[in-house]
Image 1 (cartoon, rainbow, N blue to C red):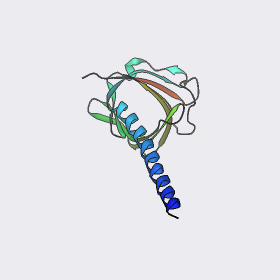
Image 2 (cartoon, helix red, strand yellow):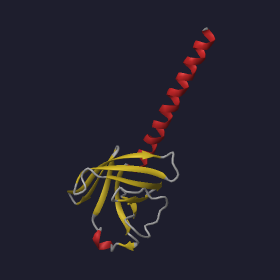
Image 3 (spheres, rainbow, N blue to C red):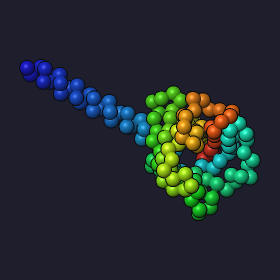
Length: 148
C-alpha cells in the first residue's frame, strides 16, 4: 500500500513539474517579445504594403499584452496567448482596444534575435500554416526590435 501511495505521489509531483515546465516555456517565449518593435515590412493579401503606410508605427509588448501605436495614439491593443510547442509556433490575440475590439486573431510566429515574423488572419477565420500572405486575408509582418 505504501509503495502504491508513494508511486501515486511521485506521479503527481512529476505531472506538476511537467505542467510548470510548459508554463516556463511560454514565459521564456514571452520574454523574447518584450520591448518595442518597428514594422519592417507588411504583405497583406499577396500585396506589399508601401512603407509610408506603416512609418512611425510601433508595437510594444509588455507581459502577454501588446499595443500598436502611432506616436502616443493607440491604434490597437490586445492580449496574446502563445503556444511555442506547436510547429510553427502559434499565437491567439484577443483585441481589447481599437476598431476590431473583441476579435480573436489567429496567427503563427517566428522570433530570432531582433527579428519577429508574424503571419495571421485578421478576420480570425483560419490560422496560417506557413509564413506567406500570398492571397486571401492573410497578412505577413516582419518586425525589427528597437534598440535602446
